[in-house]
Image 1: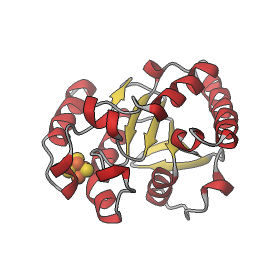
Image 2 (image 1 turned 45 degrees about the vertical axis):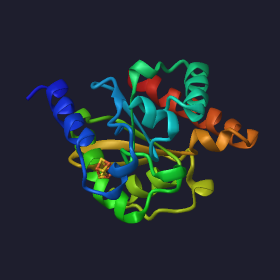
Image 3 (image 1 turned 180 degrees about the horizontal axis):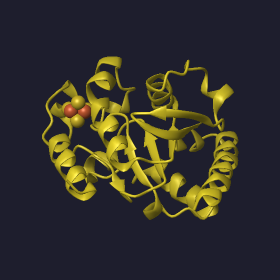
Image 4 (image 1 turned 90 degrees about the vertical axis):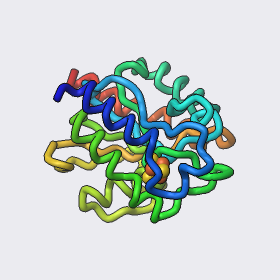
Length: 195
Ligand code: SF4
């Protein structure tokens, strides 16, 4: 089946999913969006208020910061695929629970298998913990590992995993915004080399 059909089928499953309790309070599940032939998938944590309202990833205040940073390093949102570890909004934006992550991440795994990215850029602690552990790496504190490149094989494809801070962290702390800018510059260097 062609990629667009596979992603569409998956999105339909996600939008009607009742596998964990998070479906009960969602307005919209947020499967993800972007370029299906992207070299990079950006994986955030979970939808927030605006993402839940619109059914799209990173369209609230954290999305605004992400857009600004991508613009700065001349990466177009339409060049990447953007999704989250958990596809429905946790109530009051609480952290997703371990059981919710375990239940939802087979969807992320399927997205990775369909898109076959060269890079997986994790945004925030939960995304880094899941993707690194899935690849057999010992998860460490994000302050120690952000911006590092983990070369590995994940779900049958060679991939570089790059853990970064979540753009929401940069909302109130300029230090995180600087780090995110620097780390995305690194990604851009890699992106440029492979394009
Ligand atoms: S968070 Fe994931 S597993 Fe839970 S209901 Fe939504 S799509 Fe299903």
